[in-house]
Amino acid sequence: MARPRQHSDEAILSAVRDLLLSEGPRGVTVAAVSERSGAPTGTIYHRFGSRADMVAELWIGAIRRLQEAALDAATHAPAGVEQVVAVALATVDFCAEHPDDARLLTLASRKELRTSEGLSAHRRAELDQLNTAIVRRLDQIAAGLDLPGTGSAKQRVAFAAVSLPYVAVRQVLSTRASMDEARAMVEVAARAVLAG
Image 1 (cartoon, rainbow, N blue to C red):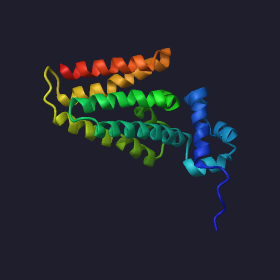
Image 2: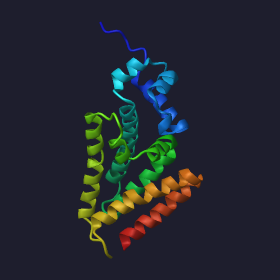
Image 3: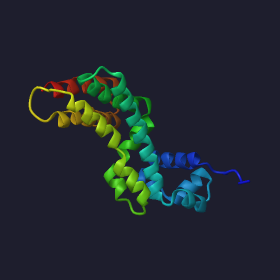
Image 4: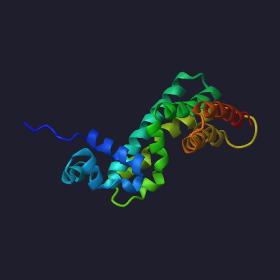
């Protein structure tokens, strides 16, 4: 019978999260994670492979939770423009409900993580495929829209559903502005982009 793990993956990743949020990406070292989590450095390397893999796993988890909320919002909204607006608002709502995840998402980007020294091929592949489901869903929604004005429906849907809420959330986090006000502005802006 295998011995039970003394240090769970969740405890180790919680330490990574704490360090990222308090110290920034440079504060996440295997030694610091070991000290904070109580897990020996050998255990950390055995489970996660590298510092880059730990950070990427944490970031990927936050993105997946956000995308699940967005896809769920699209599924439950009336077809068409309302689905796009629902996805945009789901992003703002997710970040309001999960401020640590929101801050985590602004500390790194997929491009930065993908080029991190020590990142495994497995994590790189995960990052490469990370947006597949949400992009496919937004493309499906765009294909069913006949939008007035200029620009492709696909481009405008992506801008309204992804870019607008991302910029709004970043602004709220950097200025401590109201998430409720940001949500209202995202809705107005998304509808304006789609209306042409």
